[in-house]
Length: 142
Image (cartoon, rainbow, N blue to C red; front, side, top):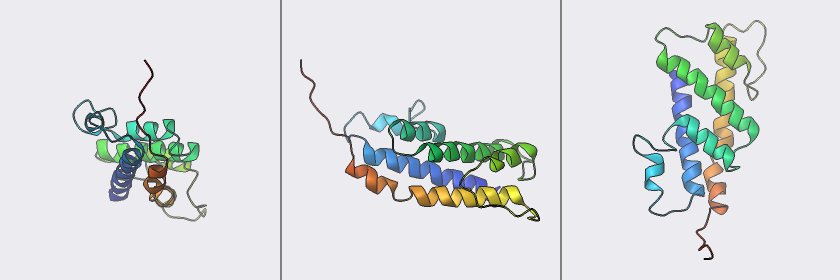
């Protein structure tokens, strides 16, 4: 349970950092991340925004959403484990995970952990690169 919640929280934070590094820094930004109706306030919206702005690849987008769904299973269902069919199915769909041996005792946990680590490593420095492509404000012609 802790692995799913921690990986989700870490990736959520990384996605926010990537968007913040890329966006224009002006007074309109404050409400994008904070508040009840913040468009980039949730993990799902941050994943979608990063992908829409070409800040993450399609594989990273798909993996992030699968990790988010696993996180949600643990966050919203009291008796969830990596042995539950839904969680096993989500973990089996992860493409960045290491191959799991047939004799592995807890294959879904191994798939989830390895895919989460791979995605976190892929994205850890992405904000640094997003700054280089940061949006700039331009005056529009009248």
